[in-house]
Amino acid sequence: YLHEVLKRAKMSEMVGFVDPSQLGALGCGNPTERSRHLANRFQNAKKWQIFMLPYNAGKHWMLTIVNPDEETIYFMDPLRRRLIGDEWEKVVE
Image (tube, rainbow, N blue to C red):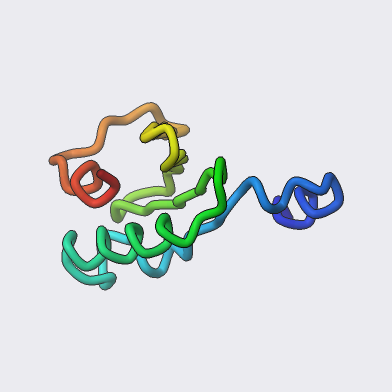
C-alpha cells in the first residue's frame, strides 16, 4: 500500500524497501549474512534514498529506517520495548 501511495506522489525513488525475509532473526542466516545483504542493498541506493527495514525479533514487528548517506538509523517499536541483546544493532550498522 505504501509503495502505491509513494508512486502516486512521485516519491517512490525516495524510499527503498528491504525484504523482511532477508533480515529476520529466525531462519534468515547469521548476523554477518544479514548485514552483508543490507550493505549490498545500500550500495545500490540512489542519493538521499532512505530504506525501510521491517524486522521481527520473534515476538512482534518493528521498523528500522536507515539513511545511508547521513549514516542515520531510526528504530521504531510500537510497543516501546528494547531489543534484547545487540544483534540487530550489529546487523544494521
